[in-house]
Image (cartoon, rainbow, N blue to C red; front, top):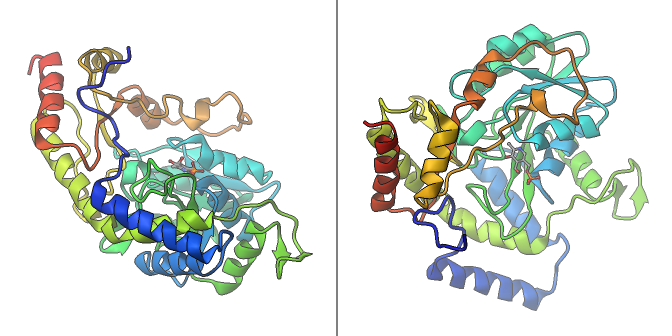
Length: 366
Ligand SMILES: Cc1ncc(COP(=O)(O)O)c(C=O)c1O
């Protein structure tokens, strides 16, 4: 214990050139002295909306709050069902449960993303919305999901928390649903230096409702018209995010370079997450599916290679959730038993990747 890992899973330290830019931006903010909302938040929101090709963006305190507010503004409430993926972080389902609605879990396809055919099977008269997750940074099959939603008169909220910078046929993550929520916390492809999130959408009235609800449900910051909690993004995080967005494309391109090296080294040894043929994956994680996962995990950790099994429990297995009579999710159950996320970040070198690739190949005698 206490040893420096050989290959780190993430390295969130900020290189000097970017650090100086951020310090300058924060210094300017301190001189202006506007720490709650204000013009800096609006500037961030404008640029974020532009990059997601949306008319509106509302900066939120975190991604979970973004999901909650987007669903609430689109009319999801007690008694409604929201169909979402069995594979995600609990934040996705908790946002639904916090509204008094019921999450209904659909199975996933081999790329970990919600399977449109499975969605169609679980829709009932109580279904109000579909909440696909662009898991590990790869976009869900949005064209099919939007068509299903249109056929059944449902709303769609994208959980794009892991996917800033991803696209599907040139259309960015967040540009498909009635709304999309992003987490922008330090682990994410576009990262604040603390908690942050955003909702993007096109409808100005729904956007104004979310703006009101992020501020306790007030209008003019005074009169409460729809009681809510405090979900305001910190202005200092908005300033940081606006500055970091300049490098977002570079970050995703570098992660794709690392992913290609892994795919070349590991193809045929384990199941690798190939880049999509019709878009860009943000590679929030590089997650393989492998045999004998727990022993491989231990072997890599013993060599100082930081790997993670992210979300070992499916959402259908979370003890705190209502026991909904959702159908079985066999593909998600098969996948979750074999997932292992390998190190991926902007400081990882080709040599680091080779250390990981060699260790995995050795484990399987490849
Ligand atoms: C898929 C997914 N949804 C929602 C969230 C929640 O975001 P936050 O932690 O910013 O509330 C996260 C990240 O933690 C996530 O990975």
